[in-house]
Image (tube, rainbow over the protein chains, first blue to last red):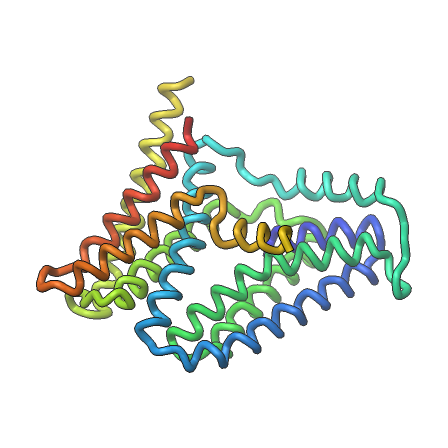
Length: 227
Length: 61
């Protein structure tokens, strides 16, 4: 969401707010349509199959987040710099040709639309997977909407990209949570009976956290050895 | 069509296809073990830790 805000801000400041906000609104509508269309369809899938598919999806997404966050935390990949991204997006926007479609600056519209849609698609999948498994997609969607409002309000207050948000720490935490739930639900879907049922979920969480911090430490040492 | 497929491949599989393949393999082994009388709950956490570590080692070179 922070990344999407940076893109929309860059388009709004350099090319005008009308096209940037229209692109954002269109992307949010598309995301709402995806959740509305897939949500009811998921409720008819048997719970074991649903947990296996949801677990696999959460693991794939969670490990992508965790992998990036661990590589950044251990110094093998540069931390994301929202100020630098904002400057680059703004420069490209100033250099782009001005073409109008339907009375809108097409560059600002499409970049805002794509930015919000692509960043939001992951959120939409998290809403669908958590919501369908726990039986309340509207509640999961409301949580995601609240987070989006929080990011927008923070952007308005700061009047710029959210460069001081500890983005890698957030990505690390999200990666840990998605991986934990992915392991838990996916294994249940594959036929596993967890010892103590739901009570073993905190145990899986602790295991994932310990492994993740251990990997950061090991990769930091490896980097120092290479330096 | 090719760009659409490439987008979904990148979205779901990400930077390292071995991670996605490893997850599928781990679920398969877990399902096979769960069908026997041997407890299978320990397999998935260990498999995920191993998959992540192998992928990180490849990236950190």
